[in-house]
Length: 116
Length: 109
Image (cartoon, rainbow over all chains, first blue to last red; front, side, top):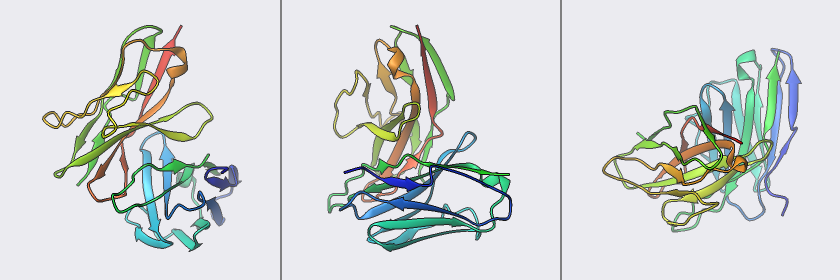
C-alpha cells in the first residue's frame, strides 16, 4: 500500500481564490482526519469522518472551510475564498476503528499551502 | 476538555547526552497517550504509545497519572533523533487525537 496519498504537495494561490486539497486514505481504513500544521499552533484537528460521515468539525476555523468524503477512498478539503492566514501545511490521516478503539493514525505527506 | 502541553518548542542537546521531552496533559477520564515523530521531509508517524510499554529506537515514555505527564526519554541521543516530536492524547472510547504544539529536538555532533 502506498499509504495515505495527498495532492497537490504544494499549492500557491492568490488571496480570494478557491483551493481544493485532496486525500486518498489507506484502503480498508474507515476513519479520515484533516489537520492543519502551523509554527504557532502546531497540529490542529480540523474535521474527521467515520465511514464517510463527518463526526466532529469543531476545529474547522470558519465557514470558508468545508470538507467532504463522498466515498471511502476520497476526501476533499476546500477553502473558499482563501486568505493569507490560511497558509500552512495540511495533513490528511486515516485509521481503522475497531470495537476496542484502535487509535493509530497514518499520515499523508501533507500539502503545503501558500496564499499570497 | 482534553489538552496537551509541550512546554519546550526547541530542545538542543549534544550527541550522547540524555534527552527528556516533556508532555503534560489535562483530561478527566482515563487517557491514552502517544508520541508521534516527524523527521525532516518525512511523514508524521507513530513512535510509541503508553499501552504498549515498549521502547522504540531507544525511546521510552511512562504515563504518570499523578503528575499527568507522559515525558519521552532517551539515555543517549543520536544525531538521527533530530526531528519534531508531538505528544498526543485520546480519551477512552474516542478516536480523536489532541496534539501538543510539538518540540523540535536538535542533536548536535
